[in-house]
Length: 268
Image 1 (tube, rainbow, N blue to C red):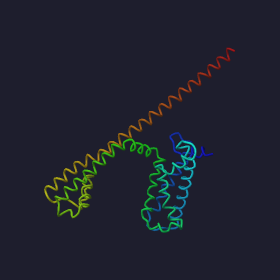
Image 2: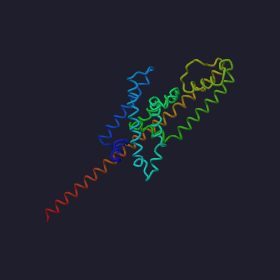
Image 3: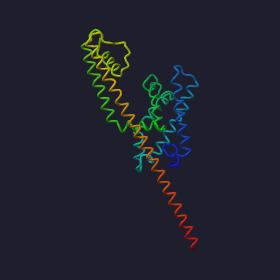
Image 4: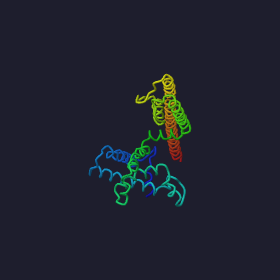
């Protein structure tokens, strides 16, 4: 019974009809769970949507927990103890927490915590589980984590350095260091809101350098992710071709054995 449940709730490339229906159902539930977030007022209809979605998420979490050994492998109680600490399980639990806080009277003291309510946005991460393209992007980010981290550190380092320089140069424009960091971030990303801008020649020159570097820094992760996405798609296509060739070979072998059996019977 647990194996049947696991085969339905666990997304995979070659899924059954029941698994595909379950995946589509969960995607719809996740999307509808965002409806209450687009309203400032809370109505009975929105509470019902939140409660129903929350109940489905809780059931889904429990089903995944009781089949943890089939996903993580291992014997005994260890996989069941490990599962709550896996990344997706943590995301699932945090996305459920605001619903429990809102419904259960014992958690009324936490209703004022906006951070807990903001955790509902983590449900969007759950879509990575049910979308093949999102899963590919997740794999790309995982495989290129080192490169992307270095780009991030480069960007942060440059932001902090240029902030110090512009803060010392533009003493009248930037009253505190945070304003300089804000300006440096906006300039590096080439957004340029215009609420803070240098007025001295040296400050303008620093802005020009920051914008040029920003174009390169912003383009780097886009190139890495694009190349990784194309490689993942190519690997997926190669795997499908290999599987198709293997199935064709097996079919040919099976057909050959059948012909051989027929010939043997005919000779007999």
